[in-house]
Length: 216
Image: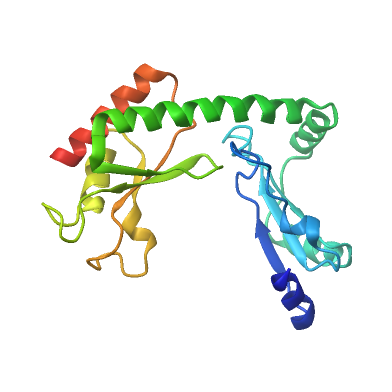
């Protein structure tokens, strides 16, 4: 509410990128800031590539009415836009209720898959890995237990992530998200997704592969 008050006083816009908020596994879904915006200062953005499939390159923005014409003009000057047929197909998919049912099914599936990989990581790493499991989204962070004062010092998560990529795993080092990622007290770990975990067997294989990357 303070942010919305600021936007009104400053006559400014707030860009809300509601990234993968449809996938929340614990508690009630968080309301979008746009839903609280009574004075039209929020531009709400989203994409269907995460909630349906990556090949669907279709994004959207909910624009305050007074800015629709200007934003549309700018958008048309930047690119040719998305194919009209594709937009119409997605619109029908939503209107017929298929999109809501799709989200419900995928939310249950992703909830199961994230727990499969979490359990597999716990079995493969034991106390050497701390899982930071958020209530929503399609990825999470893990932290290596070794740190300042630990037996081996801070783990080089950049090197671990590089070895993991060579082994076919798409993970990112946690430290690169810090302004000074090489500082001794920077948390070291990995950021990883779980949406494509097929079953417990695959989760175990991936976790063991990742463990080998840590031990190399």
